[in-house]
Every structure is written in C-alpha cells, then in structure tokens.
Image 1 (cartoon, rainbow, N blue to C red):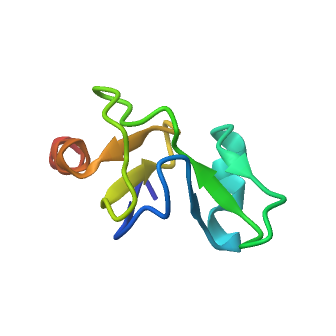
Image 2: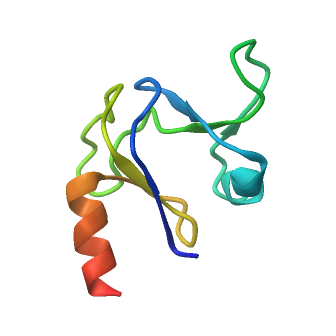
Image 3: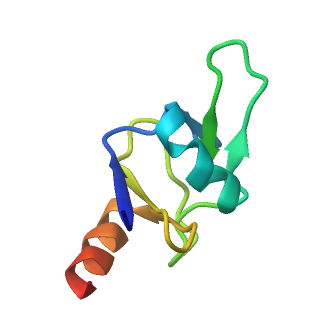
Length: 83
C-alpha cells in the first residue's frame, strides 16, 4: 500500500484520517491527536516531500505509506508512474 491519495486537505497543518491509517502515520511520525474536531490527524505542515510546497486547504495530496512522505498531487502522480 505505497500511496494513499487524499482528495482534499483539511488545513495547511493536518488532515483528519481514519483508524486504518493510524499505524502508517505513527510509523512516519505524522500522527496527531487531541483535537476536538476529530480523533486522528495526519500532519503535513512541512509540505511536499519533493519541493516543500505547502499543502493548502482543499488541495489534493498523497501520503506515501512506505516512506512517510507527503506529496503534492503533481509529485504523487510522478512517483506512482515510477513504481
């Protein structure tokens, strides 16, 4: 399960995820909890793992569960084409 595609980021810092992704988020050091609006969040404040471009609210992005990288949609497509 290398790339997980998200249709829309919740904010520039984090996006809510379901329990199925918690293990991968923990392994990547990207799990955040303790917010009233949800239980589990994937952090992505550092932006795209290729160029540092910030993921903005409403942007599509990907989470590479093998590397822990967050990728903007353009780099997500490039990486998925490589594999």
